[in-house]
Length: 324
Image 1 (cartoon, rainbow, N blue to C red):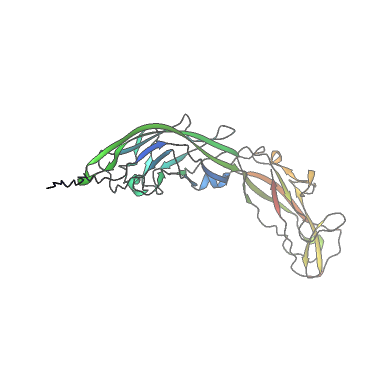
Image 2 (image 1 turned 180 degrees about the horizontal axis):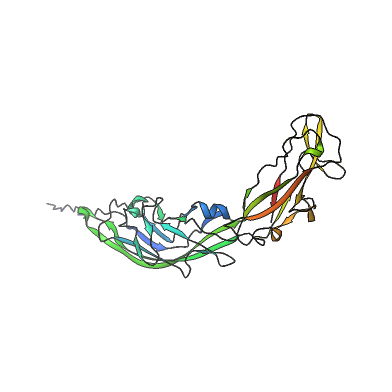
C-alpha cells in the first residue's frame, strides 16, 4: 500500500502600485528673447521654463491627499533682471500658465495644494518622469538701457507625498526629500525709437520765388535710455545726380527743394557729417531718454534759382532713419 501526499503551493498575492521618486535636477533656462526697449516699457512679455529643477518618476496614483506637498521657495539677491548699467526689469513668476497662481519670492509655494498643479501636470501620475514648469511675465513701466538682462533664481524644493498605494488605498511608503536648483532668467533689450515727423508743405505759388520757406517745424524722437544715435534724412525719390538737391515730381516735371539743419543752411542728409547727432538736438541734447523726446529743428525751402515748372501738385517722400 502506498501513501502519497499532495503538496500545493500557497502564494500570498500582494497587489500594489509602482513607487514614485522625486529628485532635484538641472533646470532649463528661461529666456524672454530679444525685445525692444519701447516694448519692454509698454507691454508685458512672457516666458517659461519646462523644468524648474524638480523631476519625479511617476507612480500610478490618481489623487494627492492633504498631507502631500511639493514646496518651492524662490529667492535671489536681486529684485529682477539686471542689465549692464544697473537698470532693473521686474517680472512676476507664476505656478501655472495663467495669472491665477503668482509666486511670492521668499515664501513657500505648494504645487500640490495650489489648485492641484502637481496633479494637473501629471507629476506623480504616470507614465514617465515629469518636471515642474514655471511661467514668467514682465511688469510694464521699466525705462531701461539696451543690453542683456539676467537673474539667477535659487529654488529650494521640499517634498513629502505618498509614493505608492496598495490594496484598499493603503500608502506603501512616502517619498520625502529636498534640494536646491538654480534657474537662469534672461532678456535682451534692443535699441528702439518712437518718431514724430510731420509732413512738409510749401503751399501754393505761381512762380518758384513765391514759395515761402518752412520754419518752426520740428522732428521729435524718443530713443532708448542712454543710447547715442544719429538721425539722417534721405535724398528723397528724385534727387539731382550732381549736386544732390532733393526734387518733388509732378508727371515728368520737377521742383527742386531742400531741408536744412536747425535754422541754418547746412543741408540735412543721410551720410557722414550730414547726419545729426543726438548731442545736437535743440531740446534735451545728449543720449536717448527712453521716456521723453529730443527735439530737432529744421527749415526747408524751394530753390529760387530754377525755372518755374508747369503747374501741378509736386510730391516727394523722404526717409528719416536713426542709426545707433
